[in-house]
Length: 233
Image (cartoon, rainbow, N blue to C red; front, side, top):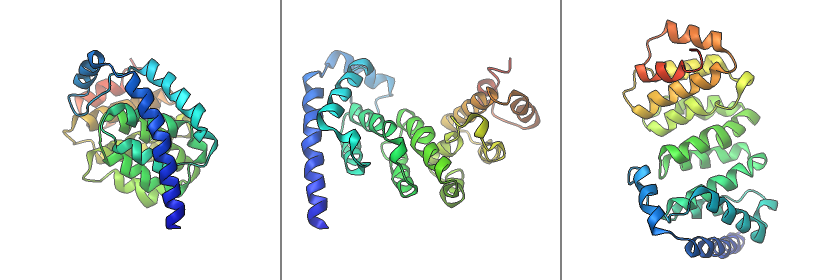
Protein backbone atom coordinates (compact mmCIF):
# COMPACT_ATOMS: atom_id res chain seq x y z
CA UNK A 1 0.00 0.00 0.00
CA UNK A 2 2.86 2.36 0.80
CA UNK A 3 4.30 1.69 -2.65
CA UNK A 4 0.97 2.37 -4.34
CA UNK A 5 0.61 5.65 -2.44
CA UNK A 6 4.14 6.60 -3.41
CA UNK A 7 3.40 5.85 -7.04
CA UNK A 8 0.27 8.01 -6.92
CA UNK A 9 2.17 10.88 -5.37
CA UNK A 10 4.92 10.62 -8.00
CA UNK A 11 2.26 10.81 -10.70
CA UNK A 12 0.67 13.83 -9.00
CA UNK A 13 4.01 15.64 -8.73
CA UNK A 14 4.77 14.94 -12.40
CA UNK A 15 1.40 16.29 -13.48
CA UNK A 16 1.65 19.39 -11.33
CA UNK A 17 5.05 20.04 -12.90
CA UNK A 18 3.20 20.55 -16.19
CA UNK A 19 0.81 23.00 -14.58
CA UNK A 20 3.69 24.86 -12.92
CA UNK A 21 5.39 25.21 -16.31
CA UNK A 22 2.22 26.52 -17.94
CA UNK A 23 1.60 28.98 -15.14
CA UNK A 24 5.19 30.17 -14.87
CA UNK A 25 5.33 30.83 -18.60
CA UNK A 26 2.37 33.15 -18.13
CA UNK A 27 3.35 34.83 -14.85
CA UNK A 28 2.50 38.53 -14.96
CA UNK A 29 3.80 40.75 -12.19
CA UNK A 30 1.74 43.74 -13.36
CA UNK A 31 -1.46 41.74 -12.90
CA UNK A 32 -0.35 40.07 -9.68
CA UNK A 33 -0.29 43.18 -7.53
CA UNK A 34 -3.91 44.31 -8.06
CA UNK A 35 -5.11 40.70 -7.78
CA UNK A 36 -3.32 40.39 -4.45
CA UNK A 37 -4.74 43.71 -3.29
CA UNK A 38 -8.26 42.56 -4.18
CA UNK A 39 -7.78 39.65 -1.79
CA UNK A 40 -6.60 42.04 0.93
CA UNK A 41 -3.03 40.78 0.66
CA UNK A 42 -3.88 37.36 2.08
CA UNK A 43 -2.32 35.42 -0.80
CA UNK A 44 0.35 35.96 -3.46
CA UNK A 45 -0.67 35.65 -7.10
CA UNK A 46 1.08 34.72 -10.30
CA UNK A 47 -0.96 37.38 -12.07
CA UNK A 48 -2.86 35.03 -14.40
CA UNK A 49 -6.36 36.37 -14.95
CA UNK A 50 -9.34 34.05 -15.08
CA UNK A 51 -9.82 33.72 -18.89
CA UNK A 52 -6.18 32.77 -19.46
CA UNK A 53 -6.07 30.55 -16.38
CA UNK A 54 -9.09 28.60 -17.62
CA UNK A 55 -7.42 28.15 -21.00
CA UNK A 56 -4.27 26.83 -19.33
CA UNK A 57 -6.32 24.56 -17.06
CA UNK A 58 -8.08 23.13 -20.10
CA UNK A 59 -4.70 22.29 -21.61
CA UNK A 60 -3.54 20.77 -18.31
CA UNK A 61 -6.63 18.57 -18.01
CA UNK A 62 -6.37 17.46 -21.63
CA UNK A 63 -2.67 16.59 -21.51
CA UNK A 64 -2.88 14.72 -18.19
CA UNK A 65 -6.23 13.02 -18.79
CA UNK A 66 -6.89 13.37 -15.07
CA UNK A 67 -10.60 14.14 -15.50
CA UNK A 68 -11.09 10.61 -16.86
CA UNK A 69 -9.67 9.06 -13.68
CA UNK A 70 -11.05 8.56 -10.13
CA UNK A 71 -11.27 11.60 -7.88
CA UNK A 72 -7.73 12.57 -6.90
CA UNK A 73 -7.51 14.19 -3.48
CA UNK A 74 -3.71 14.09 -3.56
CA UNK A 75 -3.72 16.42 -6.56
CA UNK A 76 -6.02 18.88 -4.81
CA UNK A 77 -3.98 18.78 -1.62
CA UNK A 78 -0.75 19.48 -3.48
CA UNK A 79 -2.36 22.41 -5.31
CA UNK A 80 -3.83 23.70 -2.06
CA UNK A 81 -0.45 23.68 -0.40
CA UNK A 82 1.20 25.72 -3.14
CA UNK A 83 1.84 29.38 -2.47
CA UNK A 84 0.13 31.26 -5.29
CA UNK A 85 -3.63 31.48 -5.26
CA UNK A 86 -4.10 30.40 -8.89
CA UNK A 87 -3.19 26.85 -7.86
CA UNK A 88 -6.10 26.75 -5.41
CA UNK A 89 -8.37 28.03 -8.18
CA UNK A 90 -7.26 25.15 -10.41
CA UNK A 91 -8.06 22.74 -7.59
CA UNK A 92 -11.55 24.25 -7.41
CA UNK A 93 -11.97 23.89 -11.17
CA UNK A 94 -10.92 20.25 -10.95
CA UNK A 95 -13.45 19.60 -8.18
CA UNK A 96 -16.25 21.30 -10.07
CA UNK A 97 -15.56 19.04 -13.04
CA UNK A 98 -15.49 16.00 -10.73
CA UNK A 99 -18.67 16.52 -8.70
CA UNK A 100 -20.26 13.26 -9.84
CA UNK A 101 -17.30 11.33 -8.43
CA UNK A 102 -17.67 12.64 -4.88
CA UNK A 103 -18.60 10.28 -2.06
CA UNK A 104 -19.73 10.72 1.53
CA UNK A 105 -16.19 9.91 2.66
CA UNK A 106 -14.94 13.06 0.89
CA UNK A 107 -16.75 15.43 3.27
CA UNK A 108 -13.93 15.58 5.89
CA UNK A 109 -11.59 16.55 3.06
CA UNK A 110 -13.96 19.38 2.11
CA UNK A 111 -13.89 20.52 5.72
CA UNK A 112 -10.10 20.64 5.52
CA UNK A 113 -10.29 22.75 2.36
CA UNK A 114 -12.74 25.15 3.99
CA UNK A 115 -10.55 25.63 7.04
CA UNK A 116 -7.20 25.81 5.23
CA UNK A 117 -6.07 28.98 3.44
CA UNK A 118 -9.58 30.23 4.14
CA UNK A 119 -11.08 33.20 2.37
CA UNK A 120 -14.37 33.85 0.64
CA UNK A 121 -13.07 32.97 -2.83
CA UNK A 122 -12.40 29.33 -1.95
CA UNK A 123 -15.06 28.78 0.73
CA UNK A 124 -17.80 30.10 -1.56
CA UNK A 125 -16.81 27.56 -4.21
CA UNK A 126 -16.40 24.55 -1.90
CA UNK A 127 -19.62 25.05 0.09
CA UNK A 128 -22.37 25.17 -2.57
CA UNK A 129 -20.65 22.90 -5.08
CA UNK A 130 -18.74 19.91 -3.60
CA UNK A 131 -20.36 20.10 -0.15
CA UNK A 132 -23.76 20.81 -1.66
CA UNK A 133 -23.39 17.80 -3.96
CA UNK A 134 -22.28 15.46 -1.19
CA UNK A 135 -25.10 16.58 1.12
CA UNK A 136 -27.62 16.19 -1.68
CA UNK A 137 -26.49 12.64 -2.43
CA UNK A 138 -25.88 11.63 1.19
CA UNK A 139 -28.26 13.75 3.33
CA UNK A 140 -27.21 11.96 6.51
CA UNK A 141 -24.04 14.09 6.53
CA UNK A 142 -26.19 17.07 7.50
CA UNK A 143 -26.88 15.61 10.92
CA UNK A 144 -23.50 13.95 11.18
CA UNK A 145 -21.38 16.99 10.31
CA UNK A 146 -22.96 20.10 8.81
CA UNK A 147 -25.21 20.79 11.81
CA UNK A 148 -22.00 21.07 13.81
CA UNK A 149 -20.48 23.42 11.26
CA UNK A 150 -23.33 25.89 11.79
CA UNK A 151 -22.27 26.30 15.43
CA UNK A 152 -18.53 25.87 14.96
CA UNK A 153 -15.98 28.32 16.33
CA UNK A 154 -14.52 28.47 12.83
CA UNK A 155 -16.35 31.26 11.00
CA UNK A 156 -15.75 29.72 7.57
CA UNK A 157 -17.44 26.46 8.54
CA UNK A 158 -20.43 28.46 9.75
CA UNK A 159 -20.50 30.32 6.45
CA UNK A 160 -20.27 27.01 4.57
CA UNK A 161 -23.22 25.60 6.52
CA UNK A 162 -25.34 28.62 5.62
CA UNK A 163 -24.35 28.42 1.95
CA UNK A 164 -24.27 24.71 1.16
CA UNK A 165 -27.89 24.75 -0.09
CA UNK A 166 -27.32 27.83 -2.24
CA UNK A 167 -28.01 25.99 -5.52
CA UNK A 168 -30.77 23.71 -4.22
CA UNK A 169 -33.68 25.97 -5.34
CA UNK A 170 -36.95 24.08 -4.74
CA UNK A 171 -35.03 21.28 -3.00
CA UNK A 172 -33.92 23.67 -0.26
CA UNK A 173 -34.72 22.51 3.25
CA UNK A 174 -35.99 25.89 4.37
CA UNK A 175 -36.38 24.88 8.01
CA UNK A 176 -32.72 23.91 8.09
CA UNK A 177 -31.65 27.06 6.28
CA UNK A 178 -33.63 29.31 8.62
CA UNK A 179 -32.32 27.44 11.66
CA UNK A 180 -28.71 27.96 10.62
CA UNK A 181 -29.43 31.62 9.96
CA UNK A 182 -31.02 32.14 13.38
CA UNK A 183 -28.15 30.31 15.06
CA UNK A 184 -25.83 32.91 13.51
CA UNK A 185 -28.10 35.95 13.38
CA UNK A 186 -26.31 37.77 16.22
CA UNK A 187 -22.87 37.34 14.66
CA UNK A 188 -20.89 40.53 14.16
CA UNK A 189 -18.76 38.90 11.46
CA UNK A 190 -19.16 40.56 8.08
CA UNK A 191 -18.79 37.26 6.23
CA UNK A 192 -21.53 35.62 8.28
CA UNK A 193 -23.93 38.54 7.87
CA UNK A 194 -23.18 38.59 4.14
CA UNK A 195 -23.69 34.82 3.84
CA UNK A 196 -27.09 35.08 5.54
CA UNK A 197 -28.14 37.78 3.12
CA UNK A 198 -26.83 35.86 0.12
CA UNK A 199 -28.61 32.65 1.13
CA UNK A 200 -31.89 34.49 1.68
CA UNK A 201 -31.56 36.39 -1.59
CA UNK A 202 -30.91 33.18 -3.53
CA UNK A 203 -33.80 31.33 -1.89
CA UNK A 204 -36.10 34.29 -2.54
CA UNK A 205 -35.84 33.46 -6.25
CA UNK A 206 -37.64 30.20 -5.44
CA UNK A 207 -39.87 31.16 -2.51
CA UNK A 208 -40.12 34.95 -2.13
CA UNK A 209 -43.14 34.90 0.19
CA UNK A 210 -41.45 32.65 2.73
CA UNK A 211 -38.25 34.68 2.69
CA UNK A 212 -40.17 37.93 3.08
CA UNK A 213 -42.07 36.51 6.04
CA UNK A 214 -38.85 35.24 7.62
CA UNK A 215 -37.03 38.56 7.25
CA UNK A 216 -39.97 40.51 8.65
CA UNK A 217 -40.43 38.12 11.55
CA UNK A 218 -36.86 37.94 12.85
CA UNK A 219 -34.14 40.30 13.98
CA UNK A 220 -31.30 40.15 11.48
CA UNK A 221 -28.30 42.36 10.87
CA UNK A 222 -29.05 45.30 8.54
CA UNK A 223 -26.54 43.93 6.02
CA UNK A 224 -28.32 40.55 5.97
CA UNK A 225 -31.71 42.23 5.53
CA UNK A 226 -30.45 44.49 2.77
CA UNK A 227 -28.82 41.64 0.86
CA UNK A 228 -31.66 39.20 1.46
CA UNK A 229 -34.34 41.64 0.33
CA UNK A 230 -32.81 42.68 -3.01
CA UNK A 231 -35.14 40.62 -5.17
CA UNK A 232 -38.13 41.18 -2.90
CA UNK A 233 -38.08 44.89 -3.63
